[in-house]
Length: 155
Image (cartoon, rainbow, N blue to C red):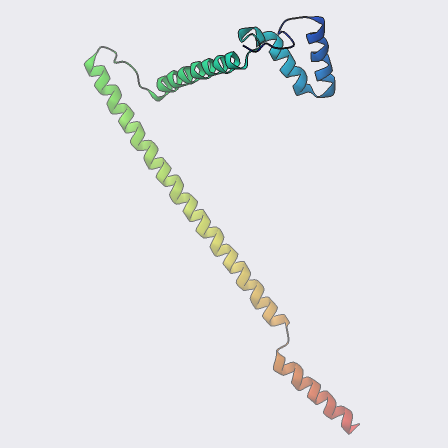
């Protein structure tokens, strides 16, 4: 059995290491504080520490699962069959309404995407047309240079 060099208790050395840890880098100080507080649960043994951590993880998973089960509506019946049927019918209606709204959101999102795409295409076409109008054509520039040469020869 391995034992820790520094026991997890409030002693001069552990407090000094915790303060030094906070001075150097705050997570070290926090880790030392956690070791002092919870280190007694596993007596400095790595095996006991792993076992203690595993126990806490399984406890958290169990409670998380129970909380989600309560939130999702997996519940016991009320004891009244008519009320339970009514509740199930209303939950089904709400679920269908939620599905319909999700579909509408998706359709609207597609519509907006297509609208933005069409607007972008229109702006790009306008830019290309204005660019085309502002640039002299290649034939025109060669003709004008040829005419300029002819007029300079005559002079």
